[in-house]
Image (cartoon, rainbow, N blue to C red; front, side):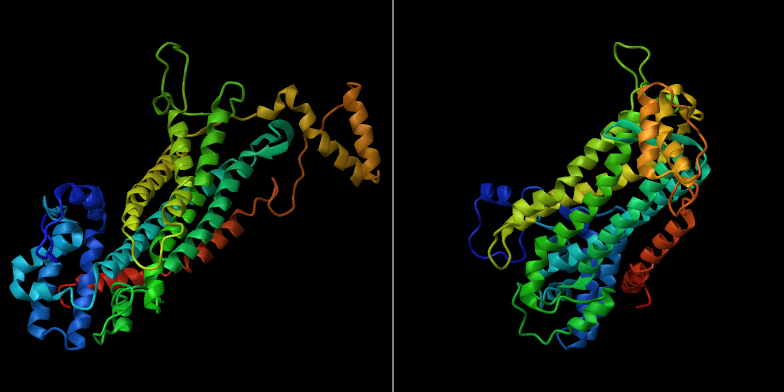
Length: 447
C-alpha cells in the first residue's frame, strides 16, 4: 500500500487491511473539500515564505484541475493508496513535479482531515437545511389549503377535541423550525477553522491561520490547537444530534401517515402507485414508503449515541477509533436527505378526506365546545363541566359542531405567516453565502 510517509519497515498486510477498513470508500466523500483545504493552505504557505510563487502557481493550477475532475466524477482513490489526502498529493506530484511534495508543510493528516470534515459537514448542513426548508414550504402550503377541514384530535389515542388538517400539517412545519435551531448550533460549531493545529500541538512554522480561515470562508478559528483536535468526535456528535432532531420530526410524521391511512381511520389516501400490495391479500394498499422512512429516521435518532459510544473516554489527542465516525455519520446524512425528499414527494400527492367529523362516533369530541359555550353565557366552568358530563353519561348530549377557535395558533388562526417569518429569520443566521463565495473564489481560474 502506497504511503507518502513510508519508512523502512512495512506494516503487515493484514494490519493494513484491518486498520484502513472502509476508510478509502468514506474518503471519496471528502475529495472535493480536501482540494479546497490544500488550495487555501498553499496560498498561505507562499504568503509566509514556505513556498515560492512559481511553485504556488503550479500547485494551484494542478489542484484546480483535480478539483474539476472530482466535480465531473472522474476521481478514484487508486488501489493500494491509503486515503484521499495521499491520492490528491500523488496526482498533484505527477502533474507538477517536486512542487507537489511541498503542500504538506505545516500540517498533519490530523488537521487535514479535521478541516476536510468541517468543510464537508458545512456543505452537508447547508444541503440538509435547504431540504428541510422545502419540506417546511410543502407543509405550510398544505396547512393553508386544508385549514378549514376538521379532523379528530387525540390524547392517549382516544378521541379528544376537534383538530384540523391545517393544524396537523402546520404543527410539523413549526417543528422543523426548532430542529433547524439545533442545526444552526451545529453549523456554528462546524464553522470554525482547525487548520494549522497540525497533530494537535501546533507548528514551529510561522503559519497564518487567520488567512486560511478567511480563504476557506470560516466564521472564526478553533484557536487552541489542542482543543481543535478535541473537536474531532464532538463536532460530529453535535451534527448528529441536529440530524436526529429532524429525523424525530420526520419519523413522527411518517407514523401519523401510516395511522391515518389505515381503514380504521381513513383520514387520508394516496394514489395506488405510491403504495404497495400484499402477496396474499388483494385489497391491501400498504404505506411502505412511510414505514421505511420511519425505520430510517429511527436509526438516525440512534446516531448520536453511536458517536458517544465510540468517543467516550478517549485520551487526549488523536486516536484511530475516530476514523470509524465517518462510517456511521456520512451514510446517515444521505439517508436523512433522501427521506426528506421522499416525504415532500408523498405529501405532494396526499388526498385529504372531508366531512370526517360528521360521523356520530365523533360527537363527544365537541363536548368541550359545549362546556365552553355555557361558560361564555355565564355558567361557572365546574358547573358546566358537570352538567355536560351528566348529559353524556345519560345519553342526552347534543353536540354543537360550531368551532370558534380564534386565538393565536388555534384552528381558526393558524398564524402561518408568523411561522414563515420565524423560519426566514432563522435561515438568515446561517450565512451560507460566505462559505459559498469563499469556495468559489478558491477554485476560480483567475485566482
